[in-house]
Length: 463
Image 1 (cartoon, helix red, strand yellow):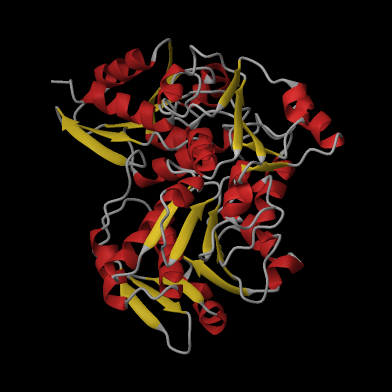
Image 2 (cartoon, helix red, strand yellow; image 1 turned 135 degrees about the horizontal axis):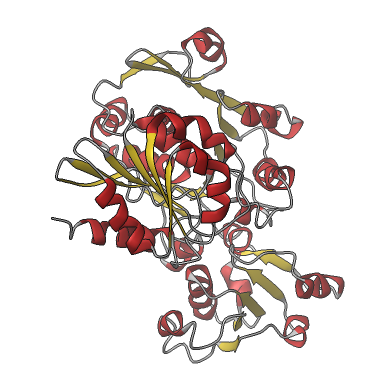
């Protein structure tokens, strides 16, 4: 793979998938005089809004509505956007003909000279990245965050940034193509069932996540969740053992073990961490974020931030003041004694479990979205205890109803707007209306952000 942008000139490069990532790649490659073609199975009218972002880039060729095998075979490199499944027959055919195929992250990471931190896990990637960013910036340290969320890693190259460290949120889709990427640090938050519409089994999903450890070395530091058995199991892989490991845990009983090898542990209202010879303490008495899992996220972030020079004062200030991120247990408003929360970023069962764990009872849960073949049975006990009314919507509503419908008053609704309205109608003073879908948004919306914003827009009209 090319390591210098100067090597891109006149190279024939095909971009597959014209979302945010495809747009960033097209702009970057064109800037460096590559011969760029973009292909997408969607038609020109379906992609009109995205195509507007490339207006004026006259040197880009577009093949929309289908993929042409002839075009694939004429390329020096094919780059897949993360949302494009890598197992399509046309990709296999191209590989057999000797065409090099890679992913956007693997390609762009190879051109970045600054140290890159890879944050992965089923949930918590964005909040850990943003917490670490806040801690570092409060310390006067320049940091750039992107990857699986709203900002493709290619944007760092396109913006011509020079940060001290690049923090990349890494989904399993991004990790599928990792062959050469060697992270300076790894953060692994947790591991639970997800994306079973793309993967044939949980094992296949775990194997994709495992690739973040592919090129660890003596200089690599892995920050791992000691309370997640699946993550601990991955840490037993010899590839992980080549570098240093810091564990974090909410279990005080693990304090002696963790303080001996380095890491962070929650004891009462304190976080105790050790990354060097001394043990430091941080208070969590004033933490603003909801949920016990927020403490895990803070520990992971502070271990990372301290690796890059965040000060004790800056870390404590961030713990005390950080309010969370949009679409993750985001408080919307109180109407008639009813509290509304937007948790649109909860796109899997594990995330919904964490959201429900925050509240005591009287929850009206709005769930559903794109059906990704997930098993919702792990939610049965908590739904039975805490959810008074379950409002189901979207492609997955029948599946969720089969798994959970007997454990709460349940309604299957046709439209998202109607689901929110019925949730409000069924609510009483003291209730919580929680939109925590447990599904991706792509049956009704272009993104979880769009879904969350629409939820807030509806709620803000209530009187």
